[in-house]
Length: 165
Image (cartoon, rainbow, N blue to C red; front, side):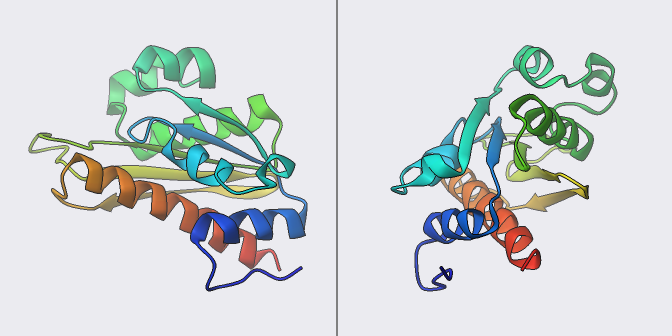
């Protein structure tokens, strides 16, 4: 089974995960389930997608994923530190091979320090250091930022799976 690079991104992710025996969990704040929805739109995705956590509020991040209140107080929800804790918490709690997390400012609005379009990503995987990055999508509008976030998260997963050859 090969991944088809002309197939839609979610289909590529599911095919690559199946090929490698990888299971996936998602931890989503600003996308509120869009990543897991994109993955589970693919027939056969239940073979690799275990669960998705929608943790829109800080309390949900604490309760469901084990994000620490101290981290939230120190750096805020839109930070790589929180994204890492979200991804690692999702992977541990779901007992999956891999978990992706997103937290950001979809807009409208934002602030000078955390502008609209800033999204922090983390990818946690068994036996591999957790990847964290921040992308500045800019003021694409709420729907645009959320769609760009979903697509980037799916690309992160696919890139990691393709590295595992």
